[in-house]
Length: 586
Image 1: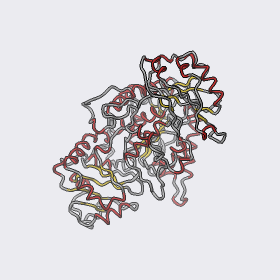
Image 2: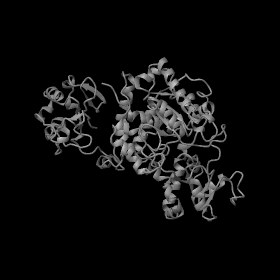
Image 3: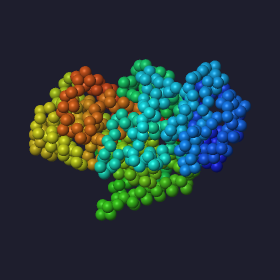
Image 4: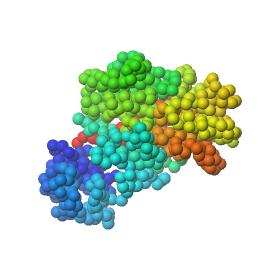
């Protein structure tokens, strides 16, 4: 638990105290009982009218133990005191905090106020407590490393942008695909974006806001879970926090499903094919008795039941070479629900969400309704995908709408003689290279083009499904876009996925540790593919294979949803995004 004190950039000087996520005016600050606060705290004071705030702040807190700070002093950094500096200037108190901490909880501290030159954060506490796995209790194992990094996570464009603007700048150049982002670097970005919430502060408060704030505090203080009988703990980043978050979701989350929108673009789930997961989520959400509410005043989240696949089929004009009409259609829909209901206008769409699996959905929805939480199959950090707000919808090629679980399972780990397998259409520039390097008859590497009608051409002796069931590793190479149904297909058939898709954020990345059940390889390392896979020790492969079998349940869709399945995991990621991106009013 800690406190952030920050002067908001609006007409009223306000101080934010994140212990209860409320904003207090400076005038009302004396009524806050500082003795109720915990000793670990952080203060950030930013003011466009520094001298005004200085005198008012001293006066406001003089009756409480903050008076021990004395008169304080301005920063000695010439750049900060210069008239040419940023209009938002920091004011800092640089006295020891021992007396404050003692007055709060009879404890002492040797920490002093110090200045972080980049964001003017003044730390007066040690790092937040960690869980049993050594991870930060605010759901990030890399928070301290991120603070210590010297702008290495910034793109050239983001260095001159505000933190919120920087979140919307693609991390990777889309045309050149330079600066590939590793899984570990994605963890850095996720943790940074969680710290720097860009969600719009609601125009007025409702009771559900406080329920979300209480849920966040309970998740941060989640009791330690050593060995959960329902879940495979090693596959999670923080099993304790996930379990508590999931329990709270089941207990309190209510979702309002908009009735606006004409079929088939809205309210018509498409349940087969590679874009079908958006349809299965729509179906499960629409039929849910636990989560769906008909009373929008009780809703924590608002669902837009859109099919991006049908949207493309109905509105895209191939000869136009333009998707502006699709973007305008979505903007018109936002205008419709905003004119009929107050909910979009209250938050600017920050508590709204959609699930969209078509390749184009990331750009189309990003341009029309980018403030919403988006569950996207095409989760490309080189595109309009905001890690921390948006989440990844698992891509699955469901064949039978009556039985979405059809075809799961495979051989045990010790009965898989094939080292690696890939087959598929040669979309993009990566798959042809993969075929050129490894489609040469190597007995350990079964790499083919499309198998349905060309099995003889590639000397294939089994079906696509059988190869997966008999292979140790299944190569999941990107096509035109970063996502592929092979990732989920591999998991469902017990094959360890080998993700060869730079900058792809895998499903449920917020909670699952993909290093425990997959292998990620850079696209440039395709020539070394066999070398890398052979170097994986037998014991390591057994651990990966075991984890794959344990996480399989999280990627399955059911006609009637089951606990921890793909529907619940997707909804949980939406819930978690809202909980940690939420900013409250005073």
